[in-house]
Image (cartoon, rainbow, N blue to C red; front, top):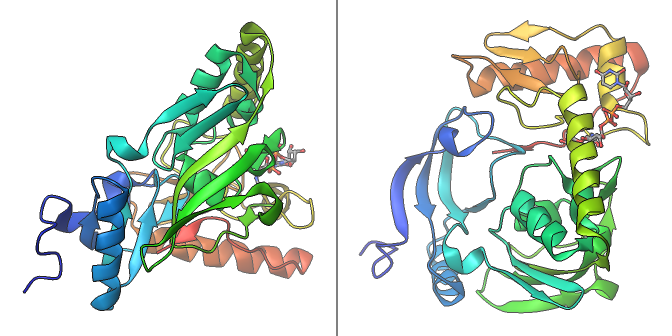
Length: 292
Ligand code: EPU
């Protein structure tokens, strides 16, 4: 019997992952799983566990490099409407893990709730951005979190409160396999002022980052507050190219995937950049981008 008997509407085999990532490179997922709701997610997780199938969780693929071989396991994508809800209650907003953060920012601005605009221009889902505490110079998502609902590999779900959560630079202490939803506590402000702030942050990013090309945001983490982009730039690596992968001319911590680019080109370029920066500055850059 097939491991996913009874869940045929949620599981597809051999699904190309490239179009689901911002790099637009990489191979297929052996199984691609889009559960209908929380109960079905729990049941599918149990089946995957019983069958020893590795589990990967996809958000919006904005910070992800999939290898050319793809993924020999199950990629779970919380993309159905049950996981995209956004609900307001006073100063709080609860959002499903699959909700798009840019949409969430717009809805909060409209309601006159401030706090999430620091994430303007950082593509991602609520689940993905909470998991790795997405942010930048203007703030991070973790500082606005009130609680996070997660599901472990046994299909058990529970809610973790702010006191028990730790958000650090591009890192959280959430270890459960899946994030299902998060609640944020925001500050009332004038909708026009919030919209202005969002616009300013967008302009900053448009001027300093290669937003129009296929990329996955910053490749490396900053090092004790020093911009990895600046280190790579000072090493003279802007424009360095391997195959279809190129260090962005606009921001050196971005790699852009040109037409025909393979995941292996990007991986080779990451290795080369890391080596050259280590030679020059004796600093070992750590990747921020998730690699499957
Ligand atoms: N710089 C250079 N050359 C470059 C890039 C940057 O000299 O090629 C200099 C800039 O001129 C500036 C300094 O380095 O003086 C810092 O640059 P920037 O303001 O772009 O910030 P960053 O530290 O490089 C971080 C985040 C970005 C986020 C920006 C803005 C990390 C790894 N990067 O970049 O996040 O967009 O701040 O808030 O934390 C991401 O997470 O994917 C990402 C792109």
